[in-house]
Image (cartoon, rainbow, N blue to C red; front, side, top):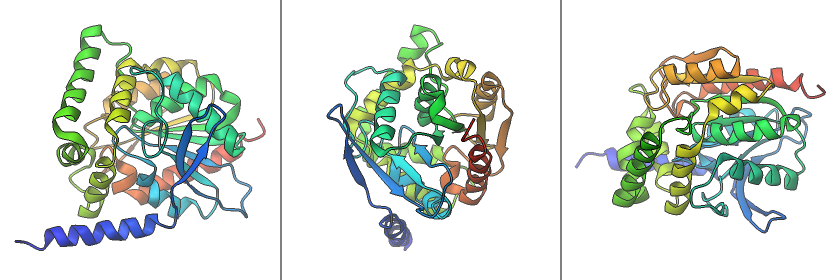
Length: 296
């Protein structure tokens, strides 16, 4: 036997130890639903809060490196989306983005966050876009990393096929098997083993019902339509080696938003995990620019 498994376990323990600085919290909303989240509050800062929305196979814990780097200068929060972690699922079996956006608004209200910079990764970009259309006054900026566009504008056959393939994989493999099979696709060939293990760790903790609802959300959503309607400040970035939401697909979303696409070299779909310095720089630059929008 090689030493790789124990080395991987050691790396995982290190990441979990780092994560322990930002423990999971839970808040109950007026609608009698719970949201679990992680939060680092830079009390000395008057900068706008940064709110992070994870993708379909992830959770609030995946942002630990951004907490460490960006939490020094502003409040940084990441939720477990409805149906993830200890967050109450949305009601519909086949939900729309607006249902998640409604919970997002309730959560921000409960925390007293009137205005923020909103960042969505992958499926989180769909929720962020839906929120932006309805609550533009709550946002100083919308940053989308490797955004998933959704299949809402596709034919019924395509929507059903994409949805059913993912649901079948979930049923066959379960969260742990899904993590083993799908996590490799999330990263580029340049990713460290630590990054690979961190993606697997997060993906293995998805809850089947919440993941299934998110799969329906992906099939129902049309992010390009929301971006075309949103008039606020938007930036879009993608890893050059992203094979899930490709640079070509993200280019179309950037065009819909009226912005230029930023391409990050040597990074895959979960670029903020494998190339944290590059992505933290993008996020920090965008946040600083957005701070200047706070009174507008």
